[in-house]
Amino acid sequence: MTRLNITILLLCAVLGVAQVWMSFMRNSTAREMHRAQQSIIVLNNEIKAMKIETGSLLRPERLRQVAHEQLGMRAPLPTQLLHTSGLRP
Image 1 (cartoon, rainbow, N blue to C red):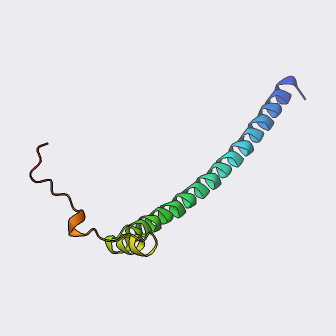
Image 2: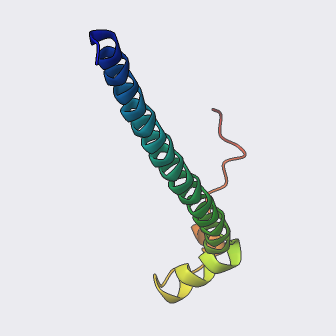
Image 3: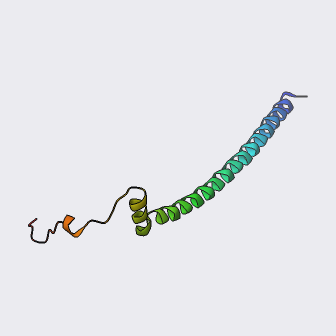
């Protein structure tokens, strides 16, 4: 074999290895991207569920119930109210 043939053979081998490595990296990146997209979908669903739960927990009726039953709070009596209509800012 001549020196040129050996060089061409070596070059083909290097290019083949590079091609296989690039294919592996492309597939690996595609799998990673798919996993990231799936995680985004799951997290978006969790965010939606948490927004619904937050809305439910912050309902005025529920807050009144928690204030009354768990914290022992009551609505103020008329004598406990301060009228500020006559005060200047």
